[in-house]
Image: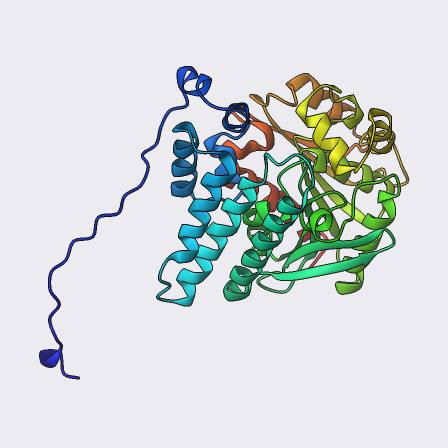
Length: 379
């Protein structure tokens, strides 16, 4: 068709209505349900965005909860709105599936108990994330069989010839899909990245019924076997966030195949969490335990600063100096007692737990640091 033959369109104006950003003042919080108060207190705007929720969705989600919406209902409504959009292109479908998946994941965070509804929500979020990942071509969905059960993972392959492999692990909350930005940052630096849902986390827990038990070491050995077989003679690293940082250190201390370890906000003694705290309750659920004693029995086997056969790996500790869960003195003990002489520590002056306020900076620091460790010995 000639340009002169193209039909003119009538001028049009479309109004898009959204909730405006609202400050969570104490007076507003006091009028909300206990769940809403707990959610808004625990999940800052930065943390919600750090879990993969689009910024605009995070702003509107918090505004809805502050105006009286139930936490899960607000998240699911916004997720369904993403899925109801008219997808003009595959790129738009990919983006909207990622957005909906992240909203569903944040929606289930206040469901402390592992009931059928929670598993169904997480399964749907995982399906949407996989659809988006397939369209993007950036990662592959994997299930790895271990002696203790199946684990779910997302492999972000190196954009070029790989110089090594790394496991990225979340914590009591914040799991594999939530840290996809970190996976992309590592992959673009020639590092194959396995975003892992470990025992008691995400897909591994809700879809495969695999919880954290005292035999967790065999699970991680099998995952490392997988990476070693996939890229023989290449170095392997382990990055852990929050409780995942503690696990990363404990695994690294025992397995000489791991040459570099990063702990982001992980405690040096996980079993010391206050037993009357929400964190300890979530630890109990992660272990599928029926008592305080059983929970302590599982988490007391995770010993981040106990020496093992691997005693000369490279270690990086990231600490946020406004972390309400891991005070500076606790982080200092973890760094001082880490059983390797090759260690560094980076403090973020206004960093929160897991450095969500500086998520992009955090990911760049980690990815560049891992690249430097691997690049030394790889052509």
